[in-house]
Length: 346
Ligand code: NAD
Image 1: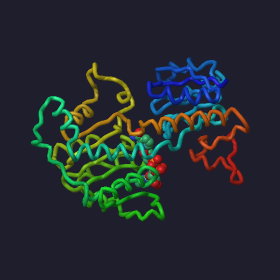
Image 2 (image 1 turned 180 degrees about the horizontal axis):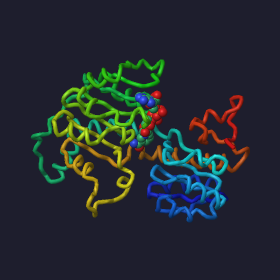
Image 3 (image 1 turned 45 degrees about the horizontal axis):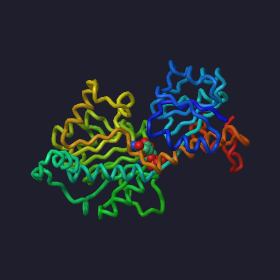
Image 4 (image 1 turned 120 degrees about the vertical axis):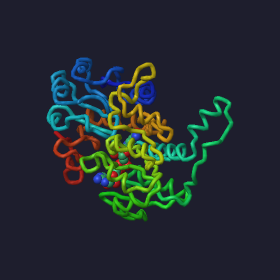
């Protein structure tokens, strides 16, 4: 039996992880708390820890895990910016789930877009109060509009297909354009200038941080609709708020927010929100915020659990090689291959 300390457990995590755990002799210690320097002690006696996007896996935490004999850190997400992968080298193996359901995220982006442009959120509120007036709910057709897609990887390409289904014109920008998909690539500036809607599907890197800022908003059409299901820091939220106040930005659909770490995923309804910027954005009639839930489908949760448990088994069984192990050297798991075969990182 492999024993795993499962940090930051949410109600929706348990069914799929319990299912795959039972199938493969993996036992969990479910913990509601996040992994931090203060809570790392709870992993003592476990073989592995399973963590999510907002757990702290810095050098101090890694050294304590190593001291306790914890052999691996199994991330149940794709991003690993919260893990000091370099510090983990030769101490604790780190794995992640590179892809789980690109459809979940692309469909959520489309759902937010439709909700926004057809004012579904407003209509829902009204009819619940038996207000059947449709004044002020005028939307616009997506058909014939131009959507600019930034990042044409797994999620971006599915979002493009959805948009084509609506009869939209698609422009795209990617630092590494994908061949063979018939995508109409343009420069970032052209995308900003010509799009009626912009949807972000690129990773957060130094090059993409605050990609949407005061300068880029100035280049956009009046009434631009901005959709972000990728990472919060792709948008300078203050510039976005200014753009909304100036009536330049027509609507914003945000599943992610730069300062979400201490806010999202928790019920804060009984508290006063300290984040003025987020509070102000939420009060805007043309802003829709969801709490980083684009991934949250049954299919995605099952894929996350199946891959994470598979990663754990790979690390503890056979030759210990795991396709999803993160290489300390550069974060590119390909570098752990020798003669085309996956080899153990250390
Ligand atoms: P992917 O790696 O398949 O695609 C990312 C694309 O972005 C690639 O084509 C890449 O070339 C491109 N890119 C890299 N740098 C760029 C740059 N500087 N400018 C423009 N494009 C650039 O990733 P994916 O699976 O499609 O995921 C996209 C993003 O979605 C992830 O980075 C993640 O931040 C986000 N995501 C969000 C959720 C959620 O629940 N909201 C869930 C999963 C993923």
